[in-house]
Image (cartoon, rainbow, N blue to C red):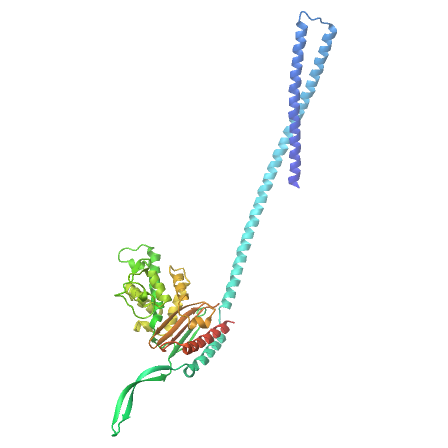
Length: 442
């Protein structure tokens, strides 16, 4: 309302100012006309040839007097208008001062309200975060009863393994007696296939809480290619730490940290045994050391793994194993227990979920492993990062399963190979453990 009133007063002042301006112009015009009339009159009076009469002179004088009176009236009006203008100008200045004071007051009030609003937002955000943290803590917590039930279910499964697991066929040397026609007994050693109970070891761990259970999980076995993932973890950790400290500068003696440098396959002199794809490539095939890492993880390539071990050695790996307490691999590089494999998998999970230089790369390689017969098939369609191992008396698989609450699972056996029967049985074990995990969190 005050702003509206002030605008009306301002318009009134502007109107008066225009009127005064018009009056000034009219006065000046009248003065000019008066002077011209006087000049004409004097010219007429003093012109010798003109006939002048007293009556004409009086008329002119009368007109001059009238103009003089009008001039005085206009002059008086002008003075009055100037006075009003001065008063209005004074009022305008006062209104401006008042508006300025009001504006400053409004700005102060607005600033105060903004500060209070920001404080309210901050308090609301903190309260929301606290509620979310409380919900997350409650959501990511297992009760002792949940854990006890899960362990009991697992023990029931494990108790049936000795009697339900497929037997493994092994060749053993046995003594066989033969009796000749004359009664002579001859003892010969012959190779026979016999069925034996398979050795199966399992380890499970929930990555949210650390809750775990297992079956023969501390028994060390020949790990075969299962060891490739833990070793490559140590390589990528070492390279990531170097690059974090030094960037991508590789002076003499530090070239091994450059995983983009070239490597050339020497078909004649390099390892050509076991699994993988590189052994079948052409002599002189070029790739990077980063490619060697992906081949070792995705295809369990023995040529790639041998070159990585030759380049990086065992020092960092042994220190890493000692730091996390994986004692089984310190006794022998190719010896590992399921529990120690689980320790490495937890470290792989932490590394691949971090912002480390090669974290996402390792995760992608393991998620694209070519072996899918056991864990990957059992937990499908859940995504997982896995590594398998397969050799004489060694048939293993381990994985990080990306459930809503991720977990790790390790299966190690002394089967010579898989096959439908063995794979189906091991998948059934994994499926039951996956169900225990899901039920535990439901």
